[in-house]
Length: 198
Image (cartoon, helix red, strand yellow):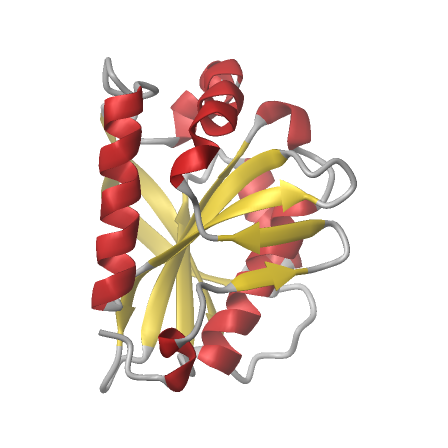
């Protein structure tokens, strides 16, 4: 359970110049399934293998339940990313594997719909979630991992102030194949500018 006073209030929403972030709601199903469905070929190379029922309403309900359970336990918080100018759902970002005590850390994962990519929306979302993690949750370190061939994701992380720390061999099974990942991280007192490749 999150111990901070923040978590006794309403669910969080974060705002920037280009995006608004808020927790997923059951009523987001139609828009979520549409943007994910139309972006399937764009997303599949970078995600765990999609299940046959990936976009079904039943799977959606289970996903929402998991989001709520993780949030209640204080282990993760999921946000949907909405483009401010259009109000449309553009993607999602999760701060997960939240640990307190000697670690005070979390891990960021994200996705964006193909038609919304390349607009700086994800970079702003990563910065907003990072600030939330450091200022509200008082975490010390945030990590993110990406496949070395995912140049777009590397650009997002480096623009958001993350630094490459190394290579994780055979780290995650992505699209059915165990893949190496670069490990990126940001520390609470890192300068806000672009990260370096390290």
